[in-house]
Length: 301
Image (cartoon, rainbow, N blue to C red):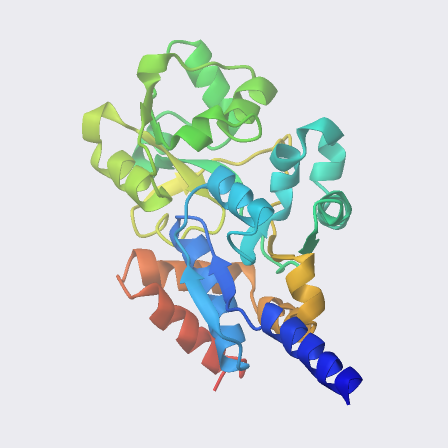
């Protein structure tokens, strides 16, 4: 009898240890919030208790939080493996191959107790957006054109977040690949800036800004009459969004893998651009957009 009581107590203790809410986070930009809400609403609809920590912070903040166990799951991008695992010295050709960079990210993070679930068929690269009229007038459609323009003394002032300017795989990668270098007074650093804020600054010419940080899936680009520069040398890694989750939490709740893989499989490049536009251009609440999308795909009721 005592053995049964102890067994029951042990099972109850084990069960309660993993009965904690799943803490869902995201980064700050609208797309990250959208993906975070897709994760959160999918899990909630499946009966999981969830805690909403979306809009937590930038990549560094989210990374520290999942490694420390402060959060359990958030959407990360495969191309960030270059930034997250600097000691791995991932070659450019590997970072530009979607299957290879995903496999590397998954393998490298397994050692940290983090599992990468299947990525969406979406590529959200770092990019630079210019007002269309300015780009046409100066014949700038690629980073090669931009380098020629700048090296001849052309005027450019870029609005972006500190992460955009300081990370070696973001703006610095364009500078190093195409052979140009901006001075400090040619950069407008906006702490915590989203692409919408930087692109609005470029579209309006605020503080002399005529270029902006952008992502490949932004919904605001066309609405603000901006153009994204082409990357003929494929400098940028592939950035496919993938839910990453603490392995301990996934082992305790294996159903999560099937749920989130299914949800992310429904996303497409044009589809996510439209969802992003609903948030950034039409001003719809992120959760409302995420819920409507998931219902339309039969993911949640």
